[in-house]
Image (tube, helix red, strand yellow):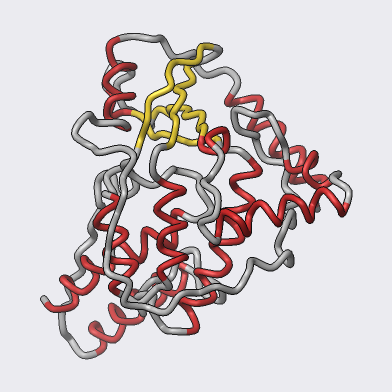
Length: 286
């Protein structure tokens, strides 16, 4: 079966390679500015009262380098396969660096925060408009490994303390968006049997990832009781990112970004859920 899917993917990739190359134009500068608007403060130093207990336990190596998929590397060209080949002594040294960052003893290395952003044109959208593209970020695999350690700890804490919305089905363990669909279908069928009508509202949040403001995200993380150290680490990963825009073989930039969650980041989905709990509660109160 794996061989069948390999052949299918080969055909899919072949089809994608025939797409018309993008042209650098006025939309390029507008697209880049959309990701790094001038009104967003960089070098954000958030000072919020520490009202929660510190989580001082070190990061464990259980999940270190567990990612087997050799996905596209970031600007440093270090792949997961390279990290997987590190000797145990080097892996331990890398874990020590992660724990120094986790303990706020050293900052995240600047090179880890270099992102290559590839604009993917949305189907049927005009090529000359900046809103016609979805930004996909290619990050350093060293940084993504650190993100995975934070994500695993955050996910475990949020699930154990029941901090995620009860009606959030996507990107969660032992849950699926198919459950949400089945619930909707069930409600429709029940209303039919009772000769009643049912209403549904479908909301598409424009720029749900791209427009997240770090100060608001930090306040929301602290509000639900996330340990301060974890909240600080999450915000530090998202602020002062260096964005390089890649159009075909051309690299434009960098520009400093402290707005939004990176598309493709392993940590972005769960932080997005937490951020948009405000909307979930607003809909529930209605």
